[in-house]
Length: 119
Image (tube, one colour):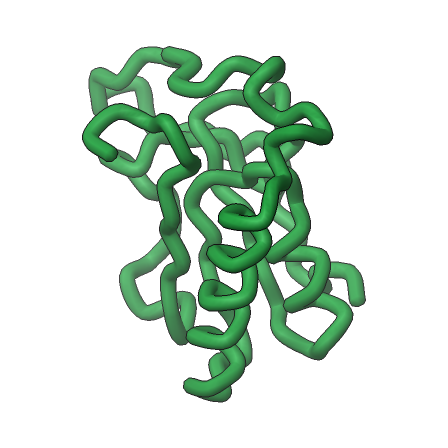
């Protein structure tokens, strides 16, 4: 199911002060990225959304698209947000300047990829 309210390349106001900085390179997402541990993480991300019966979510970090694709096929309206345009998120923006009203979504999904800083 395609997002009925697509948001494309929304950028925060210039006064926010953030600059585009790629945190995870495109090479991070080859086929080997989706190993057993990654699929287990996908399962728990999906289950957390589905168990809560969320209808519309913001997914921070577009990743490989597996989670958002599954959720959309199962009736959840998903808007993806990522700081970098290479992964084709619905919205290109920083998490420090999210360009949506605070009550726009039922929930927010943000899961760091393996090997990300702080993991």
